[in-house]
Amino acid sequence: MAVSGGLDSMVLLDALAGLVPPERLHVGHVDHALQPGSGRWARFVAERARAIGVDATSHRLDGMPAAGDSVEAWARRARYAALDRIATDAGCDLVSCAHHADDQVETLLIALGRGAGPRGLAAMASAHPAERGLHRPLLALPRIALEAHARARGLEFVQDPSNGDCRFARNALRHQALPALEAAMPGFRVGAMRAIGHLAEARALLAGIAAEELDRLVDADGRLDARGLAGLSDARHALVLRAWVDGQGLPAPSAARLADWRRQLGAAGAPPLRLPHAGAWLCRYRDSVWIERGGIDATPGEIRWHWQGEPDLALPDHDARLRIVPGGPLPADWLRSRPLLVRRARAGDRLRTVAGRPSRTLKNLWQERAVPPWLRTGLPVVEIDGRVVYAAGFGCNVDGNAVAASGGGGSAGVGLRFEPRAADDPRRRFLCAGPDAS
Image (cartoon, rainbow, N blue to C red):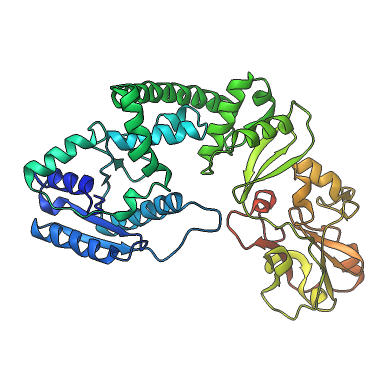
Protein backbone atom coordinates (compact mmCIF):
# COMPACT_ATOMS: atom_id res chain seq x y z
CA MET A 1 0.00 0.00 0.00
CA ALA A 2 1.07 3.59 -0.65
CA VAL A 3 1.82 5.52 2.55
CA SER A 4 2.95 9.13 2.45
CA GLY A 5 2.77 9.58 6.22
CA GLY A 6 -0.11 12.06 6.01
CA LEU A 7 -3.47 11.68 7.73
CA ASP A 8 -5.22 9.87 4.85
CA SER A 9 -2.59 7.19 4.31
CA MET A 10 -2.04 6.61 8.03
CA VAL A 11 -5.78 5.98 8.42
CA LEU A 12 -5.62 3.50 5.55
CA LEU A 13 -2.58 1.75 7.08
CA ASP A 14 -4.37 1.50 10.43
CA ALA A 15 -7.51 0.08 8.78
CA LEU A 16 -5.70 -2.48 6.63
CA ALA A 17 -3.49 -3.57 9.52
CA GLY A 18 -6.66 -4.53 11.37
CA LEU A 19 -7.99 -6.56 8.44
CA VAL A 20 -4.95 -8.17 6.77
CA PRO A 21 -2.14 -10.23 8.35
CA PRO A 22 1.13 -8.24 8.50
CA GLU A 23 2.96 -10.70 6.26
CA ARG A 24 0.50 -9.92 3.46
CA LEU A 25 1.06 -6.16 3.65
CA HIS A 26 3.95 -4.09 2.33
CA VAL A 27 4.26 -0.34 2.81
CA GLY A 28 5.59 1.71 -0.09
CA HIS A 29 6.70 5.29 0.52
CA VAL A 30 7.75 7.69 -2.25
CA ASP A 31 9.92 10.65 -1.24
CA HIS A 32 9.42 13.32 -3.90
CA ALA A 33 12.43 15.26 -2.55
CA LEU A 34 10.52 18.52 -2.97
CA GLN A 35 10.55 19.53 0.71
CA PRO A 36 13.59 19.97 3.00
CA GLY A 37 12.11 17.65 5.65
CA SER A 38 10.95 14.87 3.32
CA GLY A 39 13.62 12.46 4.59
CA ARG A 40 12.07 12.60 8.07
CA TRP A 41 8.72 11.54 6.62
CA ALA A 42 10.31 8.44 5.10
CA ARG A 43 11.78 7.52 8.50
CA PHE A 44 8.42 8.17 10.20
CA VAL A 45 6.63 5.80 7.80
CA ALA A 46 9.29 3.11 8.22
CA GLU A 47 9.05 3.34 12.04
CA ARG A 48 5.23 3.08 12.04
CA ALA A 49 5.30 0.12 9.67
CA ARG A 50 7.93 -1.63 11.78
CA ALA A 51 5.87 -1.03 14.92
CA ILE A 52 3.00 -3.11 13.51
CA GLY A 53 5.25 -5.76 11.95
CA VAL A 54 4.90 -4.68 8.31
CA ASP A 55 7.81 -4.46 5.86
CA ALA A 56 8.37 -1.06 4.24
CA THR A 57 10.27 0.28 1.24
CA SER A 58 11.07 3.94 0.59
CA HIS A 59 12.02 5.30 -2.83
CA ARG A 60 13.47 8.79 -3.25
CA LEU A 61 12.86 10.46 -6.59
CA ASP A 62 15.90 12.03 -8.23
CA GLY A 63 14.34 13.79 -11.23
CA MET A 64 12.65 17.12 -11.74
CA PRO A 65 9.74 18.29 -13.89
CA ALA A 66 10.61 19.08 -17.48
CA ALA A 67 10.27 22.64 -18.73
CA GLY A 68 6.58 23.43 -19.07
CA ASP A 69 5.48 20.41 -17.03
CA SER A 70 3.56 21.02 -13.81
CA VAL A 71 5.04 19.83 -10.52
CA GLU A 72 1.76 18.07 -9.69
CA ALA A 73 1.62 16.13 -12.98
CA TRP A 74 5.29 15.18 -12.77
CA ALA A 75 4.96 14.06 -9.13
CA ARG A 76 1.94 11.91 -9.93
CA ARG A 77 3.61 10.10 -12.84
CA ALA A 78 6.84 9.56 -10.93
CA ARG A 79 4.98 8.43 -7.79
CA TYR A 80 2.95 5.75 -9.54
CA ALA A 81 6.00 4.53 -11.47
CA ALA A 82 7.91 4.20 -8.19
CA LEU A 83 5.01 2.44 -6.47
CA ASP A 84 4.81 0.02 -9.37
CA ARG A 85 8.51 -0.84 -8.97
CA ILE A 86 8.11 -1.26 -5.21
CA ALA A 87 5.11 -3.55 -5.73
CA THR A 88 7.02 -5.62 -8.28
CA ASP A 89 10.02 -6.05 -6.00
CA ALA A 90 7.79 -6.94 -3.04
CA GLY A 91 5.72 -9.44 -5.04
CA CYS A 92 2.50 -7.49 -4.55
CA ASP A 93 -0.37 -7.63 -7.04
CA LEU A 94 -2.47 -4.86 -5.46
CA VAL A 95 -1.57 -1.26 -4.63
CA SER A 96 -3.94 0.50 -2.23
CA CYS A 97 -4.05 4.30 -2.12
CA ALA A 98 -5.77 6.56 0.41
CA HIS A 99 -7.74 8.83 -1.94
CA HIS A 100 -11.07 9.86 -0.41
CA ALA A 101 -14.29 11.55 -1.47
CA ASP A 102 -12.93 15.09 -1.14
CA ASP A 103 -10.04 14.14 -3.44
CA GLN A 104 -12.61 12.78 -5.86
CA VAL A 105 -14.62 16.01 -5.95
CA GLU A 106 -11.42 18.04 -6.43
CA THR A 107 -10.51 15.79 -9.35
CA LEU A 108 -13.95 16.38 -10.89
CA LEU A 109 -13.53 20.15 -10.66
CA ILE A 110 -10.03 20.02 -12.17
CA ALA A 111 -11.32 17.89 -15.05
CA LEU A 112 -14.25 20.27 -15.54
CA GLY A 113 -11.91 23.26 -15.69
CA ARG A 114 -9.83 21.49 -18.35
CA GLY A 115 -12.87 20.75 -20.50
CA ALA A 116 -12.56 16.97 -20.07
CA GLY A 117 -15.06 14.50 -21.48
CA PRO A 118 -16.96 11.76 -19.62
CA ARG A 119 -13.80 9.77 -18.96
CA GLY A 120 -12.06 12.63 -17.18
CA LEU A 121 -15.20 13.86 -15.43
CA ALA A 122 -15.79 10.39 -13.96
CA ALA A 123 -12.67 11.17 -11.90
CA MET A 124 -10.87 8.30 -10.15
CA ALA A 125 -12.04 4.71 -10.30
CA SER A 126 -12.18 2.77 -7.03
CA ALA A 127 -10.24 0.00 -8.77
CA HIS A 128 -8.00 0.20 -11.82
CA PRO A 129 -6.82 -3.24 -13.04
CA ALA A 130 -4.64 -1.67 -15.75
CA GLU A 131 -2.47 -0.02 -13.07
CA ARG A 132 -1.29 -3.09 -11.10
CA GLY A 133 -4.69 -3.57 -9.46
CA LEU A 134 -4.71 0.00 -8.15
CA HIS A 135 -7.30 0.10 -5.37
CA ARG A 136 -8.83 3.08 -3.55
CA PRO A 137 -10.88 1.64 -0.67
CA LEU A 138 -11.56 5.04 1.02
CA LEU A 139 -12.97 6.75 -2.06
CA ALA A 140 -16.54 6.96 -0.76
CA LEU A 141 -15.52 8.48 2.59
CA PRO A 142 -15.20 12.25 3.16
CA ARG A 143 -12.05 13.60 4.77
CA ILE A 144 -14.03 14.53 7.87
CA ALA A 145 -14.67 10.82 8.50
CA LEU A 146 -10.96 10.06 8.20
CA GLU A 147 -10.15 12.86 10.67
CA ALA A 148 -12.64 11.41 13.14
CA HIS A 149 -11.07 7.94 12.81
CA ALA A 150 -7.58 9.37 13.37
CA ARG A 151 -8.72 11.17 16.53
CA ALA A 152 -10.49 8.11 17.87
CA ARG A 153 -7.46 5.89 17.26
CA GLY A 154 -4.90 8.47 18.37
CA LEU A 155 -3.04 8.18 15.10
CA GLU A 156 0.08 10.23 14.43
CA PHE A 157 0.78 11.64 11.02
CA VAL A 158 2.96 14.22 9.27
CA GLN A 159 1.87 17.50 7.73
CA ASP A 160 3.17 18.44 4.28
CA PRO A 161 3.54 22.25 4.32
CA SER A 162 2.98 22.39 0.55
CA ASN A 163 -0.63 21.26 1.10
CA GLY A 164 -1.47 24.82 2.14
CA ASP A 165 0.11 26.44 -0.92
CA CYS A 166 -2.81 27.71 -2.99
CA ARG A 167 -0.61 28.30 -6.00
CA PHE A 168 -1.31 24.65 -6.75
CA ALA A 169 -4.72 24.10 -8.33
CA ARG A 170 -5.79 21.25 -6.06
CA ASN A 171 -4.92 23.17 -2.91
CA ALA A 172 -6.79 26.24 -4.15
CA LEU A 173 -9.88 24.12 -4.77
CA ARG A 174 -9.56 22.45 -1.37
CA HIS A 175 -9.10 25.59 0.71
CA GLN A 176 -10.96 28.22 -1.32
CA ALA A 177 -13.34 26.92 -3.96
CA LEU A 178 -14.93 23.94 -2.22
CA PRO A 179 -15.77 25.82 1.02
CA ALA A 180 -17.34 28.55 -1.11
CA LEU A 181 -19.37 26.02 -3.11
CA GLU A 182 -20.55 24.28 0.05
CA ALA A 183 -21.60 27.63 1.50
CA ALA A 184 -23.55 28.52 -1.65
CA MET A 185 -24.91 24.99 -2.23
CA PRO A 186 -25.06 22.95 1.00
CA GLY A 187 -24.43 19.29 0.22
CA PHE A 188 -22.37 20.15 -2.86
CA ARG A 189 -19.83 17.38 -2.16
CA VAL A 190 -22.55 14.76 -1.85
CA GLY A 191 -24.19 15.88 -5.08
CA ALA A 192 -20.84 15.96 -6.87
CA MET A 193 -20.12 12.37 -5.77
CA ARG A 194 -23.51 11.33 -7.10
CA ALA A 195 -22.75 13.06 -10.43
CA ILE A 196 -19.40 11.24 -10.58
CA GLY A 197 -21.28 7.95 -10.23
CA HIS A 198 -23.53 8.85 -13.17
CA LEU A 199 -20.53 9.87 -15.25
CA ALA A 200 -18.77 6.61 -14.44
CA GLU A 201 -21.82 4.73 -15.77
CA ALA A 202 -21.77 6.85 -18.94
CA ARG A 203 -18.04 6.21 -19.33
CA ALA A 204 -18.59 2.45 -19.07
CA LEU A 205 -21.42 2.59 -21.60
CA LEU A 206 -19.31 4.57 -24.08
CA ALA A 207 -16.38 2.21 -23.57
CA GLY A 208 -18.67 -0.69 -24.46
CA ILE A 209 -19.84 1.04 -27.64
CA ALA A 210 -16.26 1.80 -28.64
CA ALA A 211 -15.21 -1.81 -27.98
CA GLU A 212 -18.01 -3.13 -30.21
CA GLU A 213 -17.00 -0.81 -33.04
CA LEU A 214 -13.33 -1.67 -32.67
CA ASP A 215 -14.11 -5.39 -32.81
CA ARG A 216 -15.69 -4.68 -36.18
CA LEU A 217 -13.16 -2.20 -37.56
CA VAL A 218 -9.76 -3.46 -36.36
CA ASP A 219 -7.93 -6.23 -38.22
CA ALA A 220 -5.62 -8.91 -36.82
CA ASP A 221 -2.65 -6.51 -37.01
CA GLY A 222 -4.42 -3.86 -34.94
CA ARG A 223 -5.08 -1.59 -37.94
CA LEU A 224 -8.25 0.42 -38.31
CA ASP A 225 -10.42 0.12 -41.40
CA ALA A 226 -10.40 3.68 -42.78
CA ARG A 227 -13.53 3.11 -44.87
CA GLY A 228 -15.52 1.79 -41.93
CA LEU A 229 -14.26 4.60 -39.70
CA ALA A 230 -15.33 7.21 -42.25
CA GLY A 231 -18.84 5.76 -42.27
CA LEU A 232 -19.44 6.47 -38.56
CA SER A 233 -21.33 9.45 -37.23
CA ASP A 234 -19.17 12.32 -36.01
CA ALA A 235 -19.61 11.50 -32.33
CA ARG A 236 -19.00 7.77 -32.82
CA HIS A 237 -16.02 8.45 -35.08
CA ALA A 238 -14.37 10.58 -32.39
CA LEU A 239 -15.21 8.05 -29.67
CA VAL A 240 -13.74 5.11 -31.59
CA LEU A 241 -10.60 6.94 -32.69
CA ARG A 242 -9.92 8.12 -29.13
CA ALA A 243 -10.46 4.63 -27.71
CA TRP A 244 -8.23 3.06 -30.36
CA VAL A 245 -5.37 5.49 -29.61
CA ASP A 246 -5.76 4.73 -25.90
CA GLY A 247 -5.54 1.02 -26.69
CA GLN A 248 -2.22 1.68 -28.43
CA GLY A 249 -0.80 2.90 -25.12
CA LEU A 250 -0.69 6.56 -26.18
CA PRO A 251 -2.15 9.59 -24.39
CA ALA A 252 -5.45 10.89 -25.65
CA PRO A 253 -5.20 13.67 -28.25
CA SER A 254 -6.60 17.08 -27.44
CA ALA A 255 -10.00 17.96 -28.86
CA ALA A 256 -8.35 20.20 -31.45
CA ARG A 257 -5.87 17.53 -32.53
CA LEU A 258 -8.58 14.89 -32.70
CA ALA A 259 -10.69 17.14 -34.92
CA ASP A 260 -7.68 17.72 -37.18
CA TRP A 261 -7.04 13.97 -37.41
CA ARG A 262 -10.62 13.28 -38.35
CA ARG A 263 -10.52 15.96 -41.03
CA GLN A 264 -7.27 14.67 -42.52
CA LEU A 265 -8.19 11.01 -42.35
CA GLY A 266 -11.11 11.92 -44.56
CA ALA A 267 -13.17 9.49 -46.57
CA ALA A 268 -12.13 6.55 -48.74
CA GLY A 269 -9.33 7.30 -51.17
CA ALA A 270 -7.67 9.97 -49.02
CA PRO A 271 -3.94 10.51 -49.69
CA PRO A 272 -1.20 8.91 -47.55
CA LEU A 273 -1.00 10.46 -44.09
CA ARG A 274 1.62 10.50 -41.32
CA LEU A 275 0.97 12.76 -38.32
CA PRO A 276 3.12 13.03 -35.15
CA HIS A 277 1.65 12.25 -31.73
CA ALA A 278 3.39 11.65 -28.39
CA GLY A 279 6.62 10.32 -29.91
CA ALA A 280 4.78 8.13 -32.43
CA TRP A 281 2.96 8.60 -35.74
CA LEU A 282 -0.65 8.27 -36.78
CA CYS A 283 -0.53 6.80 -40.28
CA ARG A 284 -2.96 6.17 -43.08
CA TYR A 285 -2.20 4.46 -46.37
CA ARG A 286 -4.88 3.19 -48.71
CA ASP A 287 -7.68 1.96 -46.45
CA SER A 288 -5.74 1.29 -43.23
CA VAL A 289 -4.96 3.48 -40.23
CA TRP A 290 -2.23 2.48 -37.76
CA ILE A 291 0.31 3.75 -35.24
CA GLU A 292 4.02 3.69 -36.06
CA ARG A 293 6.85 3.86 -33.55
CA GLY A 294 10.51 4.17 -34.47
CA GLY A 295 11.75 4.18 -38.03
CA ILE A 296 13.96 6.81 -39.65
CA ASP A 297 13.11 10.25 -40.97
CA ALA A 298 16.44 11.43 -42.40
CA THR A 299 17.47 10.69 -45.99
CA PRO A 300 20.08 7.90 -45.79
CA GLY A 301 23.45 8.43 -47.45
CA GLU A 302 25.47 5.98 -49.55
CA ILE A 303 27.96 3.41 -48.23
CA ARG A 304 30.62 1.73 -50.36
CA TRP A 305 31.85 -1.61 -49.07
CA HIS A 306 34.35 -4.20 -50.27
CA TRP A 307 33.25 -7.40 -48.55
CA GLN A 308 36.10 -9.54 -47.21
CA GLY A 309 34.10 -12.18 -45.38
CA GLU A 310 32.71 -10.05 -42.53
CA PRO A 311 29.34 -11.22 -41.18
CA ASP A 312 27.63 -7.85 -41.59
CA LEU A 313 27.87 -4.16 -42.35
CA ALA A 314 26.58 -1.42 -40.07
CA LEU A 315 24.18 1.02 -41.73
CA PRO A 316 23.96 3.90 -39.21
CA ASP A 317 21.87 6.13 -41.48
CA HIS A 318 19.32 3.32 -41.72
CA ASP A 319 19.60 2.38 -38.01
CA ALA A 320 20.15 -1.17 -39.26
CA ARG A 321 22.67 -3.77 -40.40
CA LEU A 322 23.19 -5.59 -43.69
CA ARG A 323 23.98 -9.23 -42.96
CA ILE A 324 25.71 -11.76 -45.19
CA VAL A 325 23.95 -15.11 -44.83
CA PRO A 326 24.70 -18.54 -46.34
CA GLY A 327 22.52 -20.29 -48.88
CA GLY A 328 21.72 -17.39 -51.18
CA PRO A 329 22.03 -16.98 -54.97
CA LEU A 330 25.15 -14.76 -55.00
CA PRO A 331 28.50 -16.64 -55.40
CA ALA A 332 30.72 -15.68 -52.46
CA ASP A 333 33.88 -15.35 -54.57
CA TRP A 334 32.10 -13.08 -57.00
CA LEU A 335 30.73 -10.93 -54.16
CA ARG A 336 34.25 -10.55 -52.70
CA SER A 337 35.63 -9.44 -56.04
CA ARG A 338 33.38 -6.43 -56.49
CA PRO A 339 32.68 -3.30 -54.47
CA LEU A 340 29.14 -2.99 -53.12
CA LEU A 341 27.18 0.24 -53.05
CA VAL A 342 24.42 0.44 -50.43
CA ARG A 343 22.12 3.34 -51.24
CA ARG A 344 18.59 4.56 -50.86
CA ALA A 345 16.09 2.85 -53.12
CA ARG A 346 14.66 4.69 -56.10
CA ALA A 347 11.30 4.10 -57.75
CA GLY A 348 12.94 3.29 -61.10
CA ASP A 349 15.23 0.56 -59.71
CA ARG A 350 14.42 -2.84 -61.19
CA LEU A 351 14.54 -6.30 -59.62
CA ARG A 352 13.77 -9.77 -60.91
CA THR A 353 12.08 -11.58 -58.01
CA VAL A 354 11.03 -14.74 -59.92
CA ALA A 355 13.35 -16.64 -62.28
CA GLY A 356 12.18 -16.58 -65.86
CA ARG A 357 9.87 -13.64 -65.28
CA PRO A 358 10.47 -10.01 -66.32
CA SER A 359 12.14 -7.65 -63.90
CA ARG A 360 9.88 -5.12 -62.19
CA THR A 361 10.39 -1.63 -60.87
CA LEU A 362 10.56 -1.11 -57.14
CA LYS A 363 7.66 1.28 -57.48
CA ASN A 364 5.49 -1.60 -58.74
CA LEU A 365 6.76 -3.91 -56.01
CA TRP A 366 6.19 -1.29 -53.29
CA GLN A 367 2.65 -0.68 -54.46
CA GLU A 368 1.92 -4.40 -54.63
CA ARG A 369 3.23 -4.88 -51.08
CA ALA A 370 1.43 -1.70 -49.88
CA VAL A 371 4.64 -0.16 -48.55
CA PRO A 372 3.82 3.40 -47.39
CA PRO A 373 5.69 6.14 -49.30
CA TRP A 374 7.55 7.41 -46.21
CA LEU A 375 9.14 3.99 -45.57
CA ARG A 376 10.40 3.34 -49.08
CA THR A 377 13.66 5.27 -48.91
CA GLY A 378 14.41 3.50 -45.62
CA LEU A 379 14.46 0.13 -47.41
CA PRO A 380 17.85 0.30 -49.19
CA VAL A 381 19.20 -1.48 -52.25
CA VAL A 382 22.63 -3.01 -52.90
CA GLU A 383 24.16 -2.21 -56.26
CA ILE A 384 27.12 -3.99 -57.92
CA ASP A 385 28.55 -2.95 -61.27
CA GLY A 386 25.65 -0.56 -61.75
CA ARG A 387 22.99 -3.28 -61.25
CA VAL A 388 20.68 -3.77 -58.28
CA VAL A 389 21.45 -7.19 -56.80
CA TYR A 390 19.37 -6.84 -53.65
CA ALA A 391 16.42 -4.75 -52.45
CA ALA A 392 15.37 -4.77 -48.80
CA GLY A 393 11.88 -6.18 -48.59
CA PHE A 394 12.14 -8.26 -51.78
CA GLY A 395 15.43 -10.16 -51.60
CA CYS A 396 18.18 -10.76 -54.14
CA ASN A 397 17.90 -10.36 -57.87
CA VAL A 398 17.41 -13.89 -59.26
CA ASP A 399 18.78 -12.89 -62.68
CA GLY A 400 22.10 -14.77 -62.66
CA ASN A 401 23.27 -13.69 -66.12
CA ALA A 402 25.66 -11.07 -64.84
CA VAL A 403 27.05 -13.45 -62.23
CA ALA A 404 27.55 -16.29 -64.70
CA ALA A 405 29.24 -14.00 -67.21
CA SER A 406 31.72 -13.00 -64.52
CA GLY A 407 32.79 -16.63 -64.06
CA GLY A 408 31.79 -16.62 -60.40
CA GLY A 409 29.05 -19.19 -60.55
CA GLY A 410 31.00 -22.05 -59.01
CA SER A 411 31.56 -20.83 -55.41
CA ALA A 412 29.27 -21.23 -52.43
CA GLY A 413 26.18 -19.05 -52.51
CA VAL A 414 25.40 -16.29 -50.03
CA GLY A 415 22.54 -13.88 -49.62
CA LEU A 416 21.87 -10.52 -48.04
CA ARG A 417 19.51 -9.63 -45.22
CA PHE A 418 18.52 -6.16 -44.05
CA GLU A 419 17.86 -6.01 -40.29
CA PRO A 420 16.60 -2.83 -38.57
CA ARG A 421 17.99 -2.44 -35.07
CA ALA A 422 14.76 -1.76 -33.20
CA ALA A 423 12.27 -4.57 -32.67
CA ASP A 424 9.35 -2.16 -33.21
CA ASP A 425 10.79 -0.60 -36.39
CA PRO A 426 7.83 -0.26 -38.81
CA ARG A 427 9.99 -1.40 -41.74
CA ARG A 428 10.10 -4.90 -40.29
CA ARG A 429 6.51 -5.43 -41.37
CA PHE A 430 7.61 -5.34 -45.00
CA LEU A 431 10.67 -7.57 -44.76
CA CYS A 432 10.32 -11.09 -46.15
CA ALA A 433 12.00 -14.20 -44.78
CA GLY A 434 14.65 -16.45 -46.32
CA PRO A 435 18.47 -16.53 -46.57
CA ASP A 436 18.60 -14.24 -49.60
CA ALA A 437 15.90 -11.87 -48.43
CA SER A 438 15.60 -9.06 -45.93
